[in-house]
Image (cartoon, rainbow over all chains, first blue to last red; front, side, top):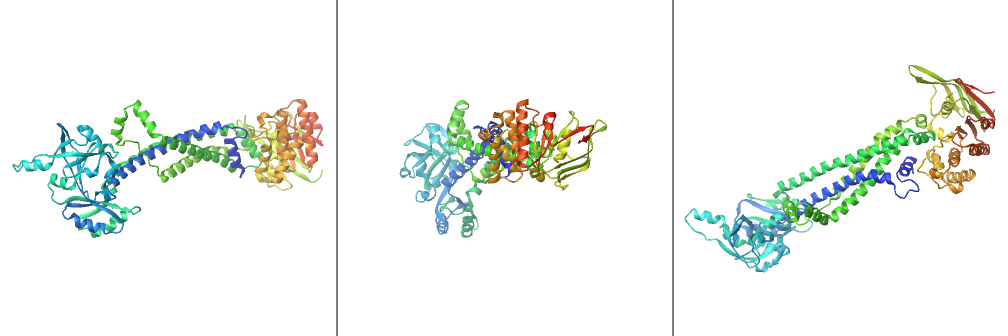
Length: 409
Length: 220
């Protein structure tokens, strides 16, 4: 082992000392910064990942949209389904309605699904917490859980559904009565906003409620596992009529995804300053070390060391402190992520309460998704910052003349 | 005197003091032969340590020449192998134990191998510290620390030892013991010795005694 590296390691982990206090304290700053960065990027990544999961789980990876309603959905579905890599296609109609239960109103988003094909794309049964998909028919709906609580409804309750079509007919002096439907099941997706405002019904019921005949708004497409969605968009688009277009889930929700990504970068940017402060504290520790070890610097000069070797010794200390701090920080961050649910429960309980927390962040559980690339960037960045923090002390140490260093009092 | 292994010719060294310069060494000529021992005495502040640092190549003279083994090339790499130094304050690295401190000189000289390790063990045994080889400097007495420093100075088999007040921090008995060891080891290893000291008795034990006075070296 080259002697500058050996001496650097010995100064950080001295012989005969079980706990290297100086090294631990110097690395602690980096560890805290790295842990915060790791946790923050994982949580922000978790939001993005959960949103993607919910979108893809409920809508498929690709949507076929049209300038106007799709009048011949069966024909288009057959064409899309024939493309290799497509695992399923289902039509969808969505809209806003007013529902009332015992004079309690709500204005949720209602979605009509084709019972014959919805299972190819949306595993509705997986999200049902009460009732059964088999009970869903043209006179029933599935309510999201929090909407059901808001309305005071449960499985078997009767709801009145008012649609924009009623207002349209009133303009023509026609009276259209609200549709009475039964609650066939309760749905919980795990996203607070969706769980507060979602109703599922059959496609036929939805078409009747909106008076859209046999047309649908869009087709949701599920891909076979491992198939690239962007590649598939390029394959699907040529078979579609000119007024239709296939787009990935990412394009459909581009604004939202951009915001999540922007927030992640902002958090990353702001927390990077913690690592910089930690690196500055390493610089300060090493500068003190240069003063404290001036005579030893003189000694190694007298033993035949060059200034460059002395500089390498101090830079190595910055590098090792960064390495130790980064390792500790990643471990600490991983531990925080592992126990995040308990930590959030305690923090939320002490402050705003769990319900407010869920309402604000939309998720029942705090999500986490760690990207290997994020960890690599954090690790390289913090080790690099710590190594650079050793450059100034190293330069000062290298400039010391042995003869002056030996005379240092 | 045999062929000099270390030779200084007309060394001049001045230091700034306000708007003038103080001439510490005024043309010093000095030579040491292989295996020879020379002591340098003089009043405090007369320039003994300055001369030793110049001889070690740690400082540069204003004018004059320095030759190691007849060559004017004075580099840190040559210093690591050509000479060993012993200081008044020992200068052991506190994070390393006695054996590691001795081997540090071999590491820096690029000579750390099995032979160097064996030599370090041997030297520690010869200075009476075989049992304390794994003790940190903080757990050694002053005399023991200086003995570690002696072993460190010799580990690379240098041609010459430059010792700057090696007993200055020790009591009389310990200082005498260290001096005995230094002279014995130099004799056994056939290493030349330049000893800077205040102690007349220690100086008298070297083959030649020089005195530095008013920037000039007087060698009887």
